[in-house]
Image (cartoon, rainbow, N blue to C red):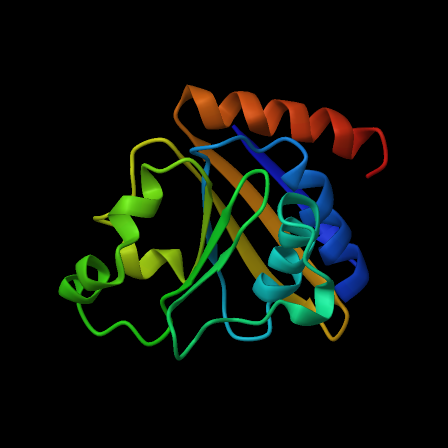
Length: 160
């Protein structure tokens, strides 16, 4: 199942993340794929604000630390794999422990961990269209994430 949305600016991308967070559950794995500036961190700001109550301005990409944990009712594990050199680096980061933990795992540059990601996951491809426009394409892998995406799609059609 796929869903495509167009964002008309950073605040709308953050709002898409907030609404998406409301359908996620412990054990959800979300991969974000897209070029620099495509809106990945904006989307995560929305996720973190709902899941962990983190103010938007406190959410940044953990490019140099690779992982940031935001504790909350449902913890959010935010990975940034931009600087990953090999799959061995993923083992050292503890990615697998988070993937099968009690929180939501979100991974920027998820295409760099393709062989490590679980079969059940949701991938969001983010594309730059224009200065303030981005295309977000959600693709569910596995029944659990397909069910979550169906709920999100209903909410999106209702005017996120």
